[in-house]
Length: 187
Image (cartoon, rainbow, N blue to C red; front, side, top):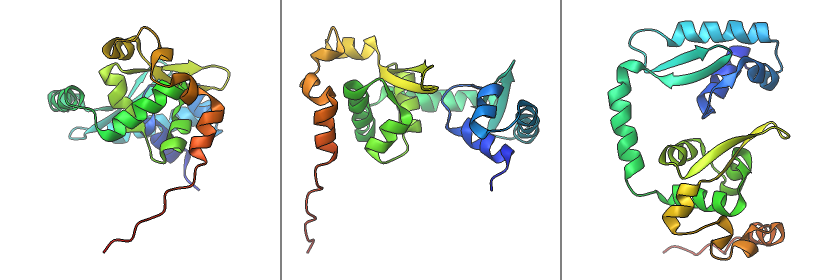
């Protein structure tokens, strides 16, 4: 069974925003005191010289971040990643968000069948999607931004091609339940 520290480390790694001690305690089913102690241990390990990752804490919010020593390198990398063309995976993810949003990362990953953390972070940085807390479900949801619509020359999301048909749950379920095409033999 993973330790509390291990669980918190994993959650901080995959989260695209800071997490509160309270949220980490809820997610790990642990007491806030234990979570705080585990965070201090992670900070002692990560916040050393010559480490590429650091754990940052401000008040009750905690986040895994890149080392300030690598800021220039990371900035150049992100600039290159966010100014080039979108990858096929990013376009696919963006399309799902456009037609099914607001959508949780878990639902998005269920549809795509792969982890979408890095792609979502890239789309957030580019300003094509935005995240919001769904207080009822206690989850983060993703939807397209006004900049995305403006880039496509649309006034609202419903102007996307076949939006009504693809946005409805019935049609989506039909598409998801279609049998996979038969595999072709390779010679």
